[in-house]
Amino acid sequence: MSLAQLQAFIGHLRQNKVFEQSDIIRIVKQMVQIDRRIGLLAVSRGYLKPEQVNAVLNVLLNNIQLKFGEAAMQLQYMTQSQVDEMLKLQQNDLYLFSQAAILARVAPPDRMAGILKDYLKAAPPDEPLVESKERVATGRKVREVLSNVKTVAALPGPAQKILAMLQDPDVDVDQVAKVVSVEPTLVALILKIVNSAFYGLRSRITTVTQAMVVLGLKKIRQVILTAGVMDKFQNIPTQQALKIWDHSIHAGQWAKEIGMALTFKETEEMFISGLVHNVGELIVIQYFPAEYRQITSLIEKGTPQIEAERRSIGGTHADLAAFTFETWQLSTETIQSAMFHHHPLGLLENVQNLSKHALILNLSVSLADMEGTAEEFEIMAKAELAYEPYKALLGNRDVDMGRLYGRVNNAVKELKRIFA
Ligand SMILES: [Fe+2]
Image (cartoon, rainbow, N blue to C red; front, side, top):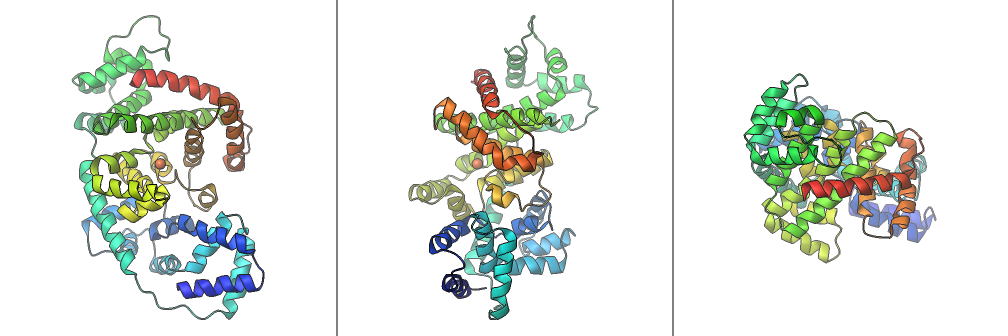
């Protein structure tokens, strides 16, 4: 569907007064938000699970000739007809316009479907598919960036080794302690945490084995991962790193508190998802300086961050993080949380197989964004409002967000003391 056809459709909407002119402008502006990459379209249709996108990308890296759809078929994730459908959808501006109209809340999905159906009865047939030069170039850039990420973003050896050991729930604690004990920075960090006010222990813990017993293996995993990530990205200028960590700790703590309030089990995992969700941004800053400069300059000229990233690296920092977490063997929930942390809720509602965990993280990131933008009482009120649209999706339970905000703030202060 060409641009001319989209213009004809908009002309039809205007002429028949289906939408107000101001609504049409809103929709067109919203269109940049719609991700037309085939992987995400397939996810929204339920043809691919979010984390399967990374597996497809991995196949693409090993075979330059393959296209996304072909790789998805090779892995038997998608059928030929599903791929064909997605390829058509990808270039269908009318579909993108409709998605944008739903997202901008100009028309609900059923009304939009009706409008399109009526219009298409009289519309000219589809033009043949031609892959644009721009799209081919973006595809190449994505492969180039991802294959670099695979090499540069590996976690430091000891951290990766310990994380792999901790994957096994029956792992021998003494064995893990032995590996940890030869890494002085890890030992220091673990002892600092176990002796912090969080645990309020009467006597001081002095050995890694004691600390592991007190903290438990889940907490140890969290500490090792954090230490590994901090070690990995230590070349980022302090101010910038502090800003990203501050935001990440807030997001992690919000996710954990909301998870606890809604009586979810894996709240430590939610904290991890928040803590690492912006690792993609750290990767771009540290390992792709030229692209990072280009992104910054586009943002300064008014381009939204996500759009600037798509133009410069062919994907977003959210995609990069999700891809990296696959290689770090983090949980599916953490991978999904990173992948969708910038998605507007309207689009998330369309994603099939999305975990509640990723929804909570999406909300938590927007709550963390509020930090420092207003007085505390204002943020408390805004937090209540922010929860409302997520409420039905998270089981329709009331949460006292104001009270949680207080808890988040106290925990963040303590966490900052530990990681300072
Ligand atoms: Fe982000």
